[in-house]
Length: 324
Ligand SMILES: [Zn+2]
Image (cartoon, protein in one colour):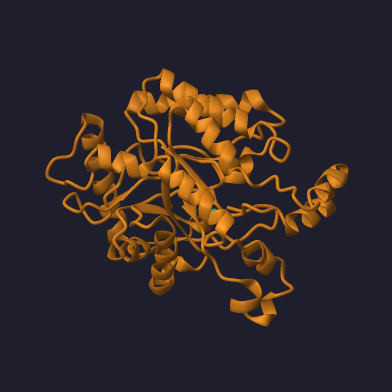
C-alpha cells in the first residue's frame, strides 16, 4: 500500500535552516527562497509517476494549528514551535485545494493526516476531518497521525467514533520492517470493521538512497520478498517532498523501483482505502482473500493481548531536521 503524508508542500523556513546546517549546499538552499521556486510542491509529479505505473496511492492531508494565532507566545521562538507549526499550509487555499481535488478526481485517495496534538483531542481531530472532507466533498476513509503519535486504543477509538475505517499510524520512523506482524489488525476484535495497517517503511528509515542506493534498495527488496513469502500487507510512506530529486536524491527513483518490483512479484498495489474496499474489510462476516483472513486473525489476537496490557503511548519528539 502506497501512502504520502502531505506535511509541507511549501519550502519556507527550511531553506534558512538547511542553509545554516548544510554549509556545502548553502547556495542551493538559499536559491530555493526565490519567488516561484518551490521544490516541495510535487503533486503533479506524483500523479505523473504513479499514473505511468498504473497505480493510485493515498495522500493524507494535514490541517494543523498556526504558530502565531493558535500557539502560546512561549513557543514562538522555539525550534519545536517552528518545526511543528511555522511551516503550516492551509489545505483550503485555492492552490492546494485544486491539487487535492485533482488527485481525488483522478482516483487517488485523500485521507486525514491528524495534526501533532490531535491523537488525544477528538474535537480537534473532528474539525480537521471536516476540513479535509469539505475540500473533496465526501467522507474520508482513514489516514495517519502526524509523527505517528498514537495512544492505543484511545486514538483508534476517537478515529472510529468519527467514522474513520482504518488507521496507518502504528509503526516507527526508526527502523523499517514488519514490527507489528505481517497482517492487518482489528483493535476492536474480529467483528469490528475498524482496521489498522501497520507501517512497514518510512522513507527516512532506510539507508539514504542518495548516498547508498544499493543498500537502500536491498532493504526494500528484502521486505518485498518477506511480504510475498508471508502473504503480508506491506505499507510504505514517502513524504511528498521526498519526491524532489534535488532535495532528496535517490528517493523518487527508489519509490518507483519499489512499485515496479511489487508489481513484478504479483502484489496488489494501491491505497489503503482502495484495499479496504476491494478486500471488503468492513464486512467482518465475509473477509476476502486467504492471506487477509489469516493476517486479520493473527492481528486481532495480537492486538487484543496488547489491549489487556493497558494504554500504550507512541509519541515522537520533533526533530528539527525532519518533518514527519
Ligand atoms: Zn506528518
